[in-house]
Image (cartoon, rainbow, N blue to C red; front, side, top):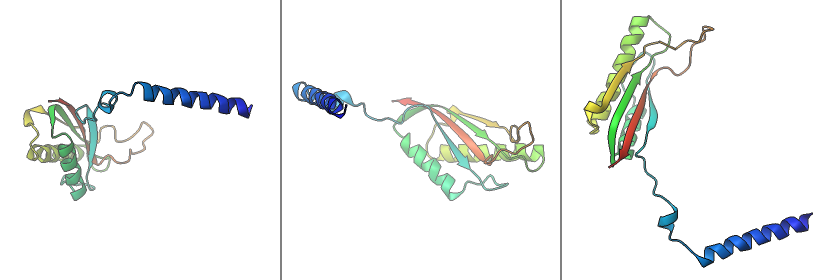
Length: 149
């Protein structure tokens, strides 16, 4: 049984090697260059009860802006979220402030402001039907639609 596996494997490798030497195509024809210019989603996290960007959040905004620098940004959805602690109105205000902080940071990097769609969800969806709080709701979700220029 082992011999037949090795014979089959050897035949396969010889066949592959033979193909590679007969008609070698240039690498550029086989591999498309990687591009960041497509739909992407990233999250920006905040401290409890805060709408101020942390150093890590500023770094994430900067890295994302650099990554998409050569792209045409068509649409940016920014959705502010909050956890279930506190009143519903306070959570709504906090999630709006978080979304606005992210919009301002992205706009400061040169992203076109007319493409922004800002939404604040407050604590909506922060607890499950069984009353369990969803972890990591202290964030803003950013969904970017970008294409190659």
